[in-house]
Length: 172
Image (cartoon, rainbow, N blue to C red; front, top):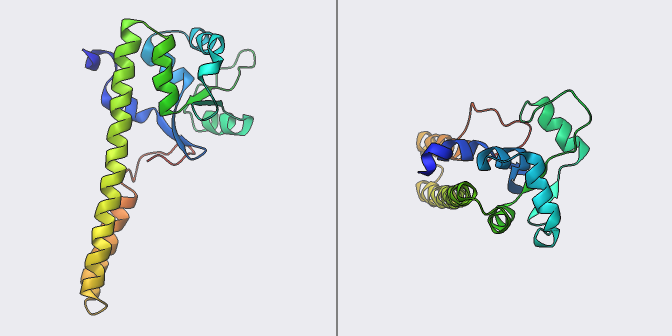
């Protein structure tokens, strides 16, 4: 069962917003798949035509340093490491065609479900905020307490993970 391999919560924690895209880092994907990062990147390089820029990109030096300083990725001290790759949802789906182990397939299915769940949550939040805006217009400016309540609810919707560390990048 996939819960034995990777929980939904663990996968959600490994999705970052970088360059305006929800991505997972190659090191996290390799860990979930149970393969070495080197093996993952070699498989990708052998099939590079399957990974255009909107599927995968390598972090810049600045992005990599920012992640390291926030302890999201290892600041391993040996020889200089290459910056990790970031895979979008489409890139992760493409990984399933080149990493064909049973575990990789199960983890890939779980990751796709998490991305769908996140999309649904964002859509639901937008719909709730829209409805709150409509209600606020109906109430008008006469009842400041109700308007204050609407404002507080909107703030909670905008920042559902208040208190969680963002690791230098905004997470949705």
